Image (cartoon, rainbow, N blue to C red):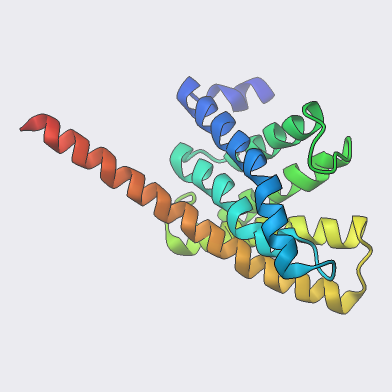
Length: 187
């Protein structure tokens, strides 16, 4: 069954998923430092940093345009964190932190006829995924009380949604460069 699932992806799709997953993990240490300046220790850092965290997963989904892409990005990211022993490696708990937001993103996209392709779907995708990650970090690992957890979820859904919009817009910008290059080649 998993083989059938993977068979729908091309080599290019896997390259995009791997590259953008790695970009997401590579930028996290820098983004985390900046976000800690704004959040302190009151709420999970990912709440604010979700703008940058969700950019990569939404961009991958927008480029690949196949359901299940977010889950694959989460798997690749969790493997990278474990293999390179970085970002507060939590062992198998990384599956929770990286894969479950991908699963919730995929579930949210079931409400959209086209996969992540509009600003609204990008906002929902990024918001749901970031809120899920924030819920896991805040409830399971940080043991936040209800009110701070609720504030964290609200903030993370907004910041993650903005990151989703940035991902969709970045895809549009990349697409316009591609069109310009093709049009110049015709002249």
